[in-house]
Length: 372
Image (cartoon, rainbow, N blue to C red; front, side, top):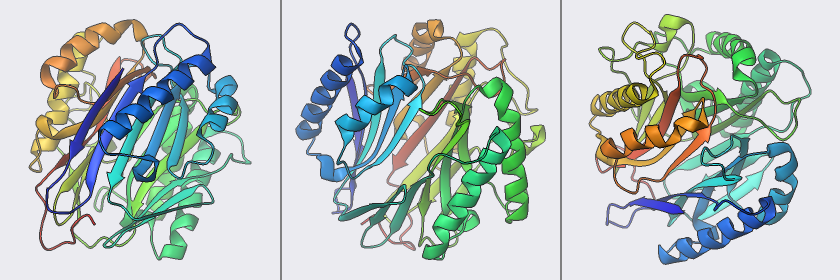
């Protein structure tokens, strides 16, 4: 089953399409994956999209180590940024996908784990590092950020100025997240990111990579020629605390303001209050309700609303909670919102559910270049 949403200004800019799909249960992995791709390609054509417009393709797999080789054969030759994560679909299927298409983007070039999108007004770099040569979540996280720093340097870019959003997938998050946090805090402190400047919108979540020794993988999107003021860092302190209050360093969300629209990148958001405490322990339904309230507050802090949501990923500690959580979310979120629900424990065990999302609306600023 696929869901789709889109955004267009109708004025000649990029039309953005968002898709999510989960395979039908019942076959082996190859059968489920091939059927999912067949359905995906059919729905692309029905919305005027193609492989040429595909920018991001993320997969959630039930057995990432054994399934990745076949999946890589299936997607061989694509020019989009590919992310493969071991996060089993909560419905019991073997594979789910999420895709983001930019219809009207002109040039994409893959090199050294990066996708470079060169457009009329912007250059965007999607970045991922190869398997690390070091052990331990702290050292691997440090390597991820240092590799990103090196990758941005040829573009005269920096993590502080140009990295808009990161995703940090951590194997066995209950035991390895502490090392990730420590290394990220250290890198940020050494590179000019602080509570008095800003951090980066991010999700740090349970996620396995194909190589079992890889404990951390970071994906990022980086806008290389944005101007001062185009990134607005979102907060709603009456609802949820700054992350630094409990020793971590990421922004609750970032609004990227373009000439004809705004992108809102909402970090992984859970049932947390203004003091940094878990709200509604042991009650997944109430936690789901609170996280929606928190997401709404973040969007509204900078001119957005829940109706602007275009894409969401829901992370559950226990996949048995999927139907209960969806019942709560679907009452509040836009109908047919592309949404995938996966098993992926959150960084604090008492959080039973977390959601990240992307929103787009027409509240741009003519002081900046449009998305062309």
